[in-house]
Image (cartoon, rainbow, N blue to C red; front, side):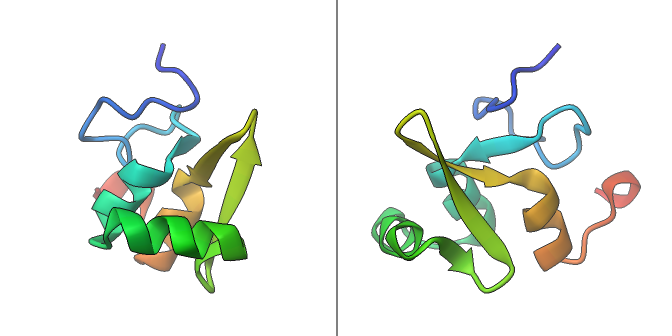
Length: 77
């Protein structure tokens, strides 16, 4: 079973059991730079639709929020 923040797999948006990804993985998916991602995370959102969570001192992003922002249905990925 994958972990909640499984960032090593390229298909994280396909797996309904992966709930969050690291900030860097989210940035890669969205096509933004690491610097831009960290600046946005300090504001609390990568985009208006994608909030950034701080868990145990690390930034995490909901895969559901990424899917919604990109208009991706779970079965269609």
